[in-house]
Length: 352
Image (tube, rainbow, N blue to C red; front, side):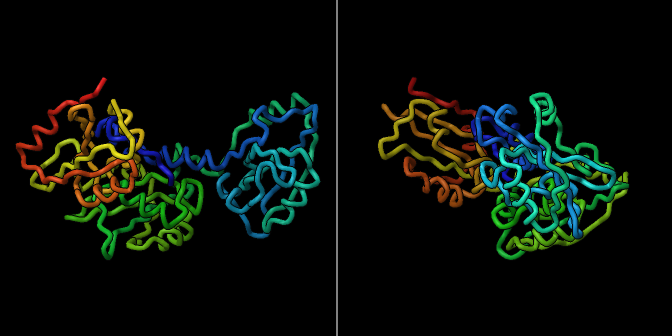
C-alpha cells in the first residue's frame, strides 16, 4: 500500500482524515496498478489495427480481482504486441480478462506462456467497438465498496514485536509496505486498515478475502506477528468498518507530558526559500512518520527563513531531515506545556 501522505502544512486534521480513509486510498492505489494504459499517449487508433485478446484463468488459478490477474501476468504495455487497457469481466463465478493489442499474434503467444492463463479469442476492433471497450469498467468478484460477509470476509490482526514499536498508523504501514506486497485486491487483502491502542502498544488489522495469502505477506514483515484470523458476520463487519484508527499520539490535543520536541532547521547548500511552501517542496517527511507530529512553522532570521516541526521522537525526525541535502538541523528541544502552547500559537512567517 503506497498511500501518499499530506505534508504537515496542511494541518493535522487532514492527517487524521487521511488515515481514517486509508481503505479508500489503498483501493485507488490498487486500481491504478491494475489499469495499464496505452504506450501511445494519443490512445489506440482502430484504423491502424487494434485487436482485443481475451483470456481466462485455468489450471487452478482463480483470480477474484484485476490486481490478482496482473500479479500473474508479466506482459507489459509496449511489449509483446500489447497496448494495455486491461479489462476484467465477471462470468458466473469466474473472472475473465482482456488486453488491447497492436499485434494479436505476439500477445496471444505471450499470454499462452503464462501458467494459469488461456487465450479464448482474438477480435479486430472497429472504431465503435474500440470506443465501447475503452469505456467498459473493470469488474471484480469482490465489491470492495459494499462488502458482503456472506461472501467471506475475515479480519486479520497483528501486533508489533521485538524493537518495533509504532506509535501511529503511518509507522505501521511504512514498515508493512517496505517488506511486503499488501495492496487492496492483491494477496488476499481487501484493505480497511485499522489500528487499536492496547495499553502502551498499538496493534493493527486488515480485512481479507483470503487469509492464507495475506498472512503469508504479513509474515514477511520483521517486527510484526499475526495474532488472529476471524471470519466476520454482518454485525462484526459493520462494527469493524465503523471503527476508528487509533494512535498512541493524540495529534489534535498534544500533551507535553507525553514527550513533544521541536526540531529546528535551516536551509543550506544554496537553498534559499522565501515561503513556507518552498521549504515543504524539499521536505518529503510526513506527519505520523519518522517521528514527526507536524505543526510546520517558519521564522524570519534576518534575510533567511528558518523552519521547524514538532516531533514525538526528536532524534528520529532529526535523522530523517538530515538526509535532505538542502536542510541542516540546528536544534532539538523538548517542550514544556508552556513552550508547546506558545509554539502552537506562533504564525508561519515568510520573506515575501
